[in-house]
Amino acid sequence: MELPQVVRESESQASRSVAMTSARTAATAAALTATLGLAAASWVVAVRQMDGMDMGVATRLGSFAFFVALWVSMMAAMMLPGAAPVVLRRAHASGGVRAVPLFVASYLAVWTLVGVAVYALYRPHESFAAGAVAIAAGVYEFTPLKQHFRQRCRESVRSGFEFGLHCVGSSIGLTLTLVALGVMSVAWMSVIAVLVLTQKLLPAKAAIDVPLALAIVGLGILIVIVPSSVPGLTPPM
Figure 1: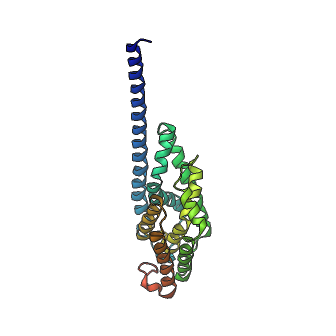
Figure 2: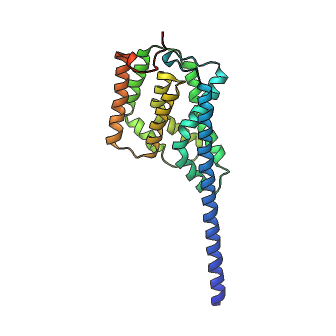
Figure 3: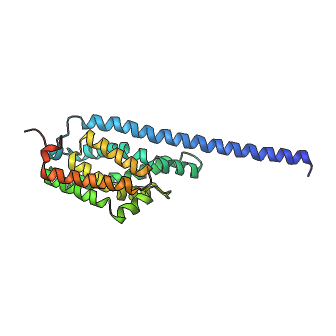
């Protein structure tokens, strides 16, 4: 083979490699923009829907259709930022953004099923019940099951549904704490969203995780003993 032909073939391969890299970079950027954009839009929708509905432990959920629509908005707002790394890996692996909508939709479908269960089981309750849920959620943070799901929630998976199951297992304690303290509370929603995002993006470290779990348990004990010390927990008389 003549040298000029070898050079041309090498340049052609290099060009194809650059083109593939550029395409993957563009797909990754598009997937990130779409995921975070959907999360931001969901925050706006959820906050507007929740306006005036927070009554702490006495909150009512409204109709099934209303609550499920609100719940999906809440989960998209709270969970998608932390899910972005896995969504990006999915887009990169598939070589484009076409697989991302189905992946995200099936991921949110799992959280929708959780919302259906919440609607079926939820009742306005006393502060003692809210404290008990918070204590249980804090204890759950220490369990090997929680750590297993947390690790799996950070790994690449085959489908959004599988990813959703892992993330539900990781965040179910924090999510139920939100439901117990004030499912329509923007303040509690923001706090739980930050905690979920932190756990999804940062590796497990006892120096962070243990104080957090103890703080959740402490919050639950405080609610049981002195519920009036937690703002917004009980509606004004």
